[in-house]
Length: 141
Picture (cartoon, rainbow, N blue to C red):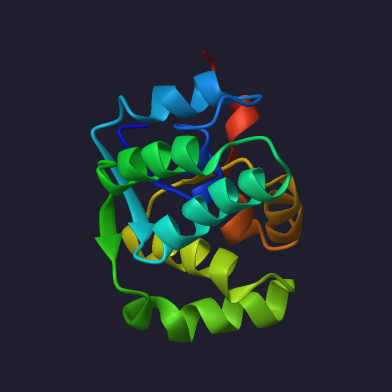
């Protein structure tokens, strides 16, 4: 893969050491990474959750947020994706937030790389959508 859509679950692993962080870092070597323009809010929400659970200090989270602010992602406005994302969300019973990534992958004719196994499972019922899904753990190191 030279280009892919990445979701916030992948981007968060660029700044928080977790399982599959090494695979997430590999995605930074792609020619291009795409995401709907709400991705950053979702990724920063992961940092907030880590503060809430006591896994990160506010200072550490702030520094990691600054790294996410500079992440090399080509953004697409959610408004352009919303009608198709709504149809995906309703048909596959996923959140609009998740469906926006899937809609972008379809629009750009790219794979969607995600660390969200639930999202991968939900898309499995639609062969056209399932073929776009790449679970982060399946990427070689």
